[in-house]
Length: 288
Image (cartoon, rainbow, N blue to C red; front, side, top):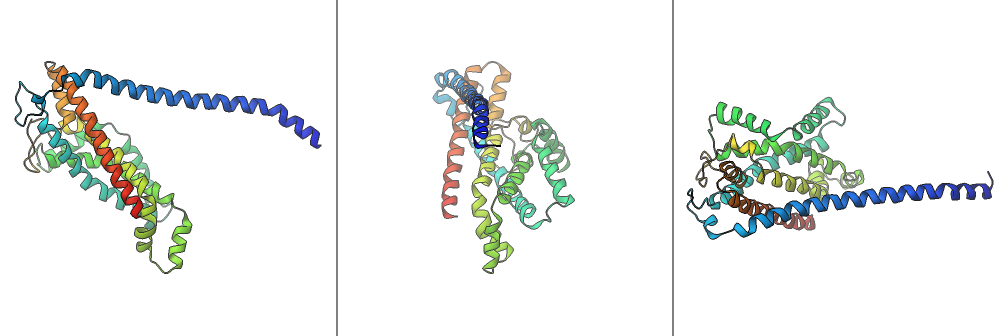
């Protein structure tokens, strides 16, 4: 084929490719606008409906049927999320490290764990609630309590943290490991000092997603942590988080305005937790 024929062919095919690129670019912009627009619509609706009904009585320490205070629910949400993270993060991170760095690549055990984790990550939260009720509340006899709810949330978010940790570690270039081995470092030191710091942003992204799911979880906690409107005073005491408190107010149908106010506080709490986690992630990444 001559140069002129090749140039003519390029001119002939360029418009169709250019048109396809424009169409793809337009679809990307449309998807972005649809996603951002939907998010702004939901957040704006919650703020418009909830902010006018925020009042000091909603933050009183003592709860009663008149003020329907959410103070206890805010404290319980922080305690529940912190305890669930303490349980889930070490198990998920260490499990991901084993799968990525120590397990035999392509083995049946690794494939089974991956398939199981991906399957569990897609299960509805009500299934985890029933599992937690049967396992922690009934079999272990922990009753409706903080520890039962935290263990249920940990089981729920463990597959996400496990798989994201594994994928983050596998994305680290092999040359990093080879360079560390060449300098005489062992596998454990290489994993902790070289590989893990590089994979930290991906791992913390999974933790952020887990925090959002823990804070907004309702069905699983109704069956495991209970709905008592009081602050947890021990690991075996019952209580309600903000999402459960919101559900209870909406179910009663007498405090719909207060329910929207609780939704605003829940939204702010999720943003605050994510901002704090992001700040910690940046500091850890810089140190790494």
